[in-house]
Image (cartoon, rainbow, N blue to C red; front, side, top):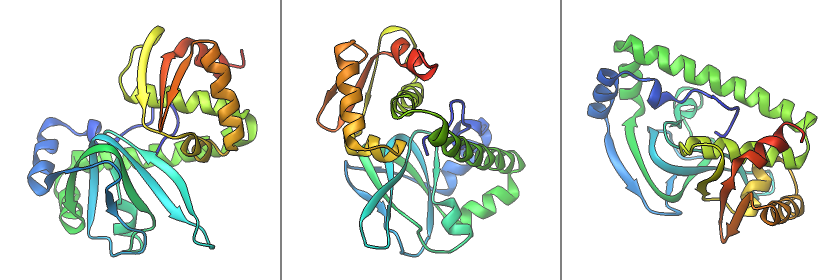
Length: 226
């Protein structure tokens, strides 16, 4: 899920041999935009490694309303906790744009970690990093403004796109304003107002279901309180 800057991702942590071995255990699948990779409540039979693209993590509240709980992207491991803890999916995973993923049966993934110590270390590091990012997100909710949280989220997404910083850098982010509001714990009105301000300053452009970062130096100043 989107978290702290520098959060470790499972796939990039693997060595070449471990990566090749994991490819041999699974199969590559391409999902179209809005395709559902798995549904909340169904048996957890596979884990997913996102190779390209983004997926929404969607959960339902007690009244059946869908909530955007997170966003995973290139390098992220998805569905591993359900496979290990409950045996059932704890959230729905949906493609945002075209997604390429490696599907590995949960049992085969467990055996793979047992027989590949380097991969097991990468897995533990990625899980610890994700937990730390979750703590950082909760702290961020209490100590920063909605605009700062939105700027930090867009910078994290831009970094995941491997876009160099500075004026003129761009990264198209496949998210609606409702998605952004859910991810930062703010109202849609806050997101709409903030993006309007940033558009006037040349920091971003927006369209239907996407935001493009045009100048990340402005966002970095906002994160820093400027």
